[in-house]
Each structure stands twice: as C-alpha cells, then as structure tokens.
Image 1 (cartoon, helix red, strand yellow):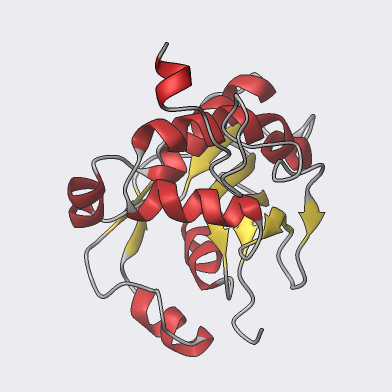
Image 2 (cartoon, one colour):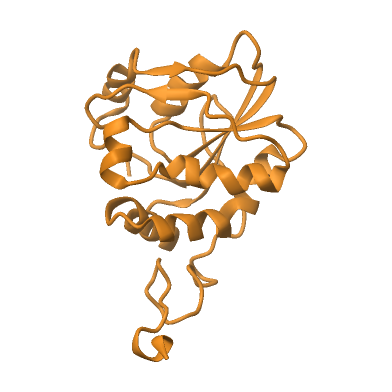
Length: 198
C-alpha cells in the first residue's frame, strides 16, 4: 500500500524502481585513479551514484548510506581481494559525526570487510578543524597537518575506505599514519572521485 502512495525512486536519478540505485546509476566496476597511491573509485561525483552520495551525506540519510554501502560493497572490496588483512575507514571529526548522526566511511567499510572476510579496524581518528570542502589541493594538505592520528596497530596489508577522492590529501594523511611500523601495503577504495580541475 505504501508503495502505491510513495513509490520507490532511484537515489541517483529519481527514476521509479524498487532498489536504492537503478541499473543505470549502479556502477559496474572499480576504476584506478591517477596518482602515486593505489586508489580506486566507482564513479565520478557528477554521476547518479554521486547524487545518491550527496543525498546520504548532506540530508543526512543514514538509511540511504547503509543501502549504498550494501549495494557497492562487492565493487569497493574488489581492489583488496586476496591482498589485504584488514579494512580501515577514513575517520570523521567528532563534530561531523554528531551533526550527521553517523560516520559515512565506517558505514561503507563494514560490508566491505564482510565481503573480504577480514576485520574492520578503526585505526585512525581525526581532530576537529576546518572542513576540506572548497579547499585547493595544497590547502587541503595544510588543513590536515597533525589532525589525523593512528589509534590502533594495523596489519601488514590494509584497504582504506572513504566516500570521496578529490585531491588525495586525506588518503595521504591517513597513509602517513598507517604505513611504517606494521603496515607496508595500502590500497584505497572510494565511492566517487571529484576532480578539482574539472
């Protein structure tokens, strides 16, 4: 009955359909991002998946975030399959978690860890500060100096999961904390890529 009154719509393109994303908005495979670090993404931020991600982040909509995570987990897991010993989510600040009501990267990372059959390790924390949105690449790097810290020892090979890859400043700051003593290999998987020069 509710379906007749409020029919389900795709979170990306708003087409009538019974699932979170229609086949046209659901990504088909992970794509390697350009850069020194091994980072993978599923779609451009301007895609249907990107529109669904914006709805989950900025409405905010925890239910949609969970459905996106479940839908995309097999693809996010693929770059780390048979290569990683743990999944680590990129941390949010305490203020962002409180305002949004959830930590998006953690929600994305949970089903990825389940698909890979490895533990989820909350190995990083992020101290509060100005948001990254709207900053240039060098400004993003400066903005994160000293804000991301390791809190737990991680295994040798780690898949780092985040919702967005823009300049790589956030994943580089996370990598600085993760790589070294016990972790020697890091692979990054994100839902979307946003190219600051496009």
